[in-house]
Image (cartoon, rainbow, N blue to C red; front, side):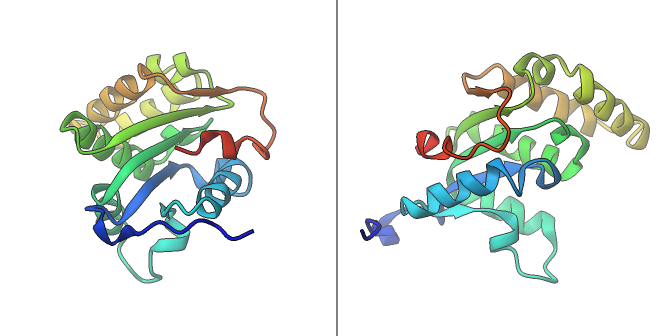
Length: 173
């Protein structure tokens, strides 16, 4: 059966969905399944390893992709907050959401939403390490604020999910 084709020429965005995730945590499990399901449904999805060219600077490419997306799906996992790339993406996502230029859907993958909201557990430890590294900068406070804002949103809480296989089609937006 052929996948339905969507005429994308008339859309003001390059991607339907931007996936924000910690690769080490979910790339070979849940995020791969979600990405495949979105693509099979004809949804143009940005995922860093698929869309960024080798040798290209990461930050400008990621920010450009977020800005040219209609929806951001954030997969919060155990070590999401340990990545400054993920946290920088998150700040950009929240800024665009507040300007009503982006819809945001959080997924809490084997992490409690309250851990993200309160920055406790692994999130608290990761942010404490970032605070040491960026001492005197407002960067960590921006990350904290963004985490709280997104964790306060309604999202999917996927606790005890081994790999997410079979769940991705239900998340199609």
